[in-house]
Length: 332
Image (cartoon, rainbow, N blue to C red):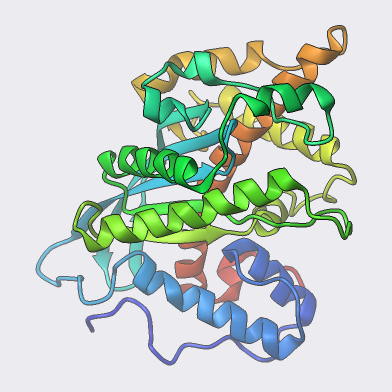
C-alpha cells in the first residue's frame, strides 16, 4: 500500500447536515451548500491532504518517513502585513499512522511591506491599519506610491524573503473587495487585492525559476479560520469584538506556552515578540493608542491563528479519512 489514504474514500451518507457542517469546520472545508455539496466538499478537502502533505508514494515500509512542514502564514496588508512562520515535524510510521509534533513558532512579525526593500527594522515600519475615509491618512498616503510597478518591487522583495526561509507551504489570506454587505469597493481594498495577485504571480515565477522549490501556495478563507476558532461559541457580532476575541485566544496560548497543553512552542527569535504582545494589549484610557495597538495585535493574531488552524486541519483530515467521523467527536 503506497498511499496512506484510500483512493475511493467517501463519507457515510447517513450523516446529518449539522454533522457535516461540524466536520467541514474541523477540516477547513466549504461550510455552505446542500447536503450533497457538503459531502463532496468534505471528501475533496480531506483527500487533498494526501497531496498537500506529500504522503503519496513517499511511504517506505522499511523505515519511518520523516520530514518537516515549514509553513509561512501571511495576513495581507501593505503598511500592516503580518506573518507567522511555523515548523512541525511529520512522521509516517505506517500508512495510516501519521503524527505531527507540536508546532514551533520561528518568526512572528507585523511590518510595512516597504521594509523588505529598504532593510528597515520592524519597529520603524509598523503602523496602524489606515482608514481610507480619514483625511489624515490622505497626507500620509500621498508620500507613498501605490503604482503597480512600485508595488511589484515590494511584492518581489517580500517573496524573496519568504523563499529564503525555505517554506513547504505558503498560506495567503484571501481578500474580499466588499464587506458588511456594502456595495462600494474601497480603494484600499483594491490596493491590497492587487498586492495579493502580485504575490501569487511572484511566488509562481520563483517556483518556475527554481528559486522556490517544492512549495505549495494556498489561499486561506478568513471565514473558515474564524469558524474553526469560534466553533464552540458564536462568532462575535462586530469587527471590534472579533478582534478582541482573537487576541484573547492568542493571549491564552501565550500564557500556556510552558504547559503540556501548549498550542505551540516558541523559537528563540520570537521570545521578545511574545514578551511584548501582552504589553501592547489596548487600554481604554488612551483611546487613539488603544486602536493602533488593537489593530497591530489583531493582524499578528490573524497570521498566527491562520497558520495553526491549517496545521490542525491537516491532522483532522487524516483522522477523518483513516479513522472515520467519530475520531473528530462530531455530535449528532
